[in-house]
Every structure is written in structure tokens, then in C-alpha cells.
Image 1 (cartoon, rainbow, N blue to C red):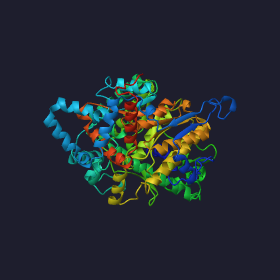
Image 2 (image 1 turned 90 degrees about the vertical axis):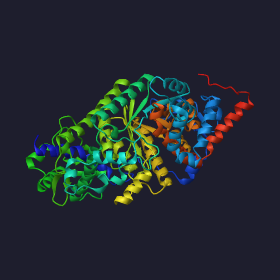
Image 3 (image 1 turned 60 degrees about the horizontal axis):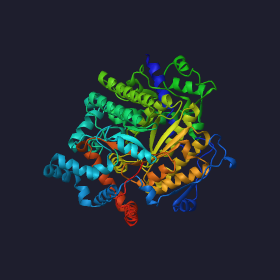
Image 4 (image 1 turned 120 degrees about the vertical axis):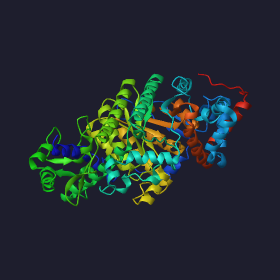
Length: 621
């Protein structure tokens, strides 16, 4: 393949992402998500009963003659919330949540675990864990042992997102070494300052242990290609187990488990630089002040600019813009520059960036070894294998979000999977972290692209897991803090993104969203929006998600009222999920100290059962 063809492949692969820079709320469609007054939100958040308005499912207009029964959800109704739990399970929840509020136990949990192993022996230690933390937050040790819990939850309207939660128990020094070895290329090792890399997208030893400050996300460190193959097989087994457990299950994956993270760093930097490049091209045509998705570059002017910049000969550039969609109108819309990374493309030649000072395209790194090339290719192949297994097993695949220096590449690769596999129904779901300042821009641009290309948009909305680490890294290394200023700003961003996706569902029924939150106010906000828009839970367009062992007072009333709701269901051998349990203890410390609500509801239900003679209550299903 010639150099100019490489350039063409790169241009088309990157330009669709340009729209993710500086987009205002009105840039993606004329029907922008509305903004409620604070008074309306306060009134809504104070409600304990939410009524779903009747809707007509076939058409998108409401009809009095086809009204459905109103749905009442009372999150204070403990009988409904804990119907699936026996009294022993309620007592275990109370014990575990209480222990999570004791600082010394949480802070010294690893030391206490090691001491318990020595004093009790393996068998007794595992028995104790299954009666407490492991039993609360983990479903079982393998695919077979988790089935009873999954079946029980399904009987009460709650599905499962399976997540094999085994992690390496590395020291900080071991984690830092693995990270530096896997994120620094051979070229960088030979000449550390030879390439003009941005600080944000380079590995830094003081932040090499990506577990630092992270309490609610699993972390993978690259060892070698065989380890990535093994982790891919684990994900495949998870997908198969999800398919065998239910007809509408989910499975979660992480990109950093599937390959050397060096590629994610480099590809992210390339994507960001190409966004800037297209802003530069728009400015050359006097369109920098226009809304990004309304910027239509005049084709002839664009060709002349690229020729002057030495990007390629005019004849070659002419060939780049031929095709079914490109150039037919005489203009180029940035979202029309679509390209898929395929097996015939040499990945290292995609890692070219424009130098705005010289006006030329330059490689991000001076050289790539043949093994680095193969490692990049294998990561893409593993992602493709997992997506195909998800389709074969009827399972929806959620790609977890990660740190901002990896995320542009992760989102881009996920978007490419959606373009291929979401043609007939939503299979691939991308995750949007709403604590990011650019979250709304990312959501709106991806929704717009899905609409134009006609595939099903799938999103999981979360607040985010890496806030403290991201802030510390930005301050220490010296780049803009990517996180919203405070928790309230993140709440507003979450609701803004959610409302936009709900409006997209209302308009064409091809978008889908998982509202992954433990925040009861956000759940109420979602239900209220669904009421106003006439979105019925039976359409299975809006899902809710919580972690196993937490917020049952939200999950089970929703499930029993007919809403699609899922628990993230971790599983794995006791001794190998200790890092996961350690994080759950830390997360619950803040959660339980901030709100006594869940414990008070548990006590309320226990008292009700004792007073009503249900001392030996067992769930019936």
C-alpha cells in the first residue's frame, strides 16, 4: 500500500471523531434535550411514588384508547424490596454494611485478611468470607455455582451482567513496572525525547499503578500476549454463561485486558490531534465559529489545502474523496468521513498526526517494531472475536470506560464495533463517564452518527470511577483537569446526557441506555422523564443497573414493576476475588457513612417480619 493510501485510510478513520471537540448543546440535532428548572427537579426528587403514564407501543403518539395501567413504585416499601431475601441474608447485609463504616477495618482490610488466613486456615477463612463479604457481593466461584442466585433474581424481575472478578494481587512496585514496560515503545526507550508526544498520553511512573485512588473498577496490567489470550477466553466463557443463564443477558469487558495498552495511549493521542487538525481545516474555510456538525468543508478548497500542505499529490487526494457518500454534494461533513480499521490496514501507519507548524503528516513515533505491529493487530482481533461471540450467544456486550488517556481509543474501537454489530439490534454498548466535562459532547456526537448511519445506539451511563486519580495526574503532569468541578456538576451532566438519550429513544426507538447508578434521585429522574415522554418499560429501551449486594431497595421494586433492571454479578474463587472485595468495602464506607437509608430500610423490614410472625421467612419463587 502506498504512503498516500495510508494517509487516506488515516484521514477517514479519524475525522468522524472531530465532532467531539467543543460542541454546544444544540449542535447535534434540532430537538435538543430540554432543561428543567431547579424547582421542578427539587419537586421531582422529593417524590417517593412514581407513576408511569400510559403509552401506545406501536406508534410514537399517545392514545387515550390504548392506555396502559399506571405503574406505582414506592422505594420505601421494604416488603417488595426484600421479598427475594431471607432473614439471614438481611442480617448479613446489616453486618457487612456496619463493618464497612468502621475505618480501621476498611483501611487495614488487606492486613486483616492475611492475618485471618493464617489464624483460621484456608477452609475456615473461605467459610467465614462466604458468610460475610463474599456472600454479600459475589455470586459464586464458577459458572455453575452462580446459577441459583441468577435464577432467583430473575424470578423477582432482576437480570444479570456477569463479570468474572478475579484480579492479580500485585504490589505497587510490580504494577508500576508492568505499566511502564507495556506503555513505552521501543522507540521511546531508545530515544525518550525524540518524538513530540503529549504529556497526557505518555506513561508516567508515579501513576503507573492505575489502581491508585480507584475503588469501583477492576484494573488489568499487561504481562504478555498469552495472558491477553487467556483473558479473552475468560470473557468468552462469561459471554457463554450469560447466554445460557438468560435470554437477554449482558456481559462486561475491558479493553486493557485485551492487549498492550501502548496502542491505546498512542491511538488516543492521534485521535485528539486529528480533531484539532479538522478544526484547523474548518478555520481555513472561515467556518471555525460554526457548530461542528454543521461544518461542511468545500471539497475543492479542502483538496487545495491538503495539496499545499504536502499531504499528497492532487490526483491522489482526488481518489481519497470518491465513494458512495464522500463528495457527492461538493462538501465534506465531518461525520461522513467514516472508515473501519480492518485486517488489511497496517496499524502503525494509522498512527500519523498532522504537524500544524510544518503542514505535513508525521508518524507519532519514529519507528515501530514488527512485534509492536502484531500486538496492535491482535488487540483489534480479540475485540472482534468477543463481539462475534456476543452475537452468537444473544448477549449484549458492555465495554467499560477507563482512564481519559486511554478512553478516546476505547470509544473509537467500541464505535467501530457498534457500526458492524448494531445494525439489527443493540449488541455493543459504550460507557460514558458523566464526571467528564466532555461527556455530553461525546454522547450527542455518537448519537448523531448512529442516526445518520442507521445503527442502534447503545450506552451505559455512569458517573465515573477514576476521579481522584485523574485529578491528581492532571495537576502533577500539567494538563487541564478533565473532571467536572464538583459532584453537583456531575449530577447535572448525568441528567443532561440521560435526557438527551431518552429523547432520542422517544424520536426513533433505536437508541438504548443503561442507567447504571445507585443514586435514588437519578432513578426517580429517569422514571419521571419516561413518564413525560411516554416511554414504556416493556419496550426494553431503558435499563437500570446496580452492583450485586447493594441498593436492593432500588433494583427489586423496579424489576417487579416490569422495568428491565440488572445486577452486576461478580464471580470467582474466594481467594482470587479479594482485591474486588477490598474495593467494595472501601466504596461502601463512603456510601454508608453518607446515607443511613439502606440500613434503616433493612432494619425496618426485619422488624416487620418479626412482628408479623415471619421469623423464619424464606423467599418463594
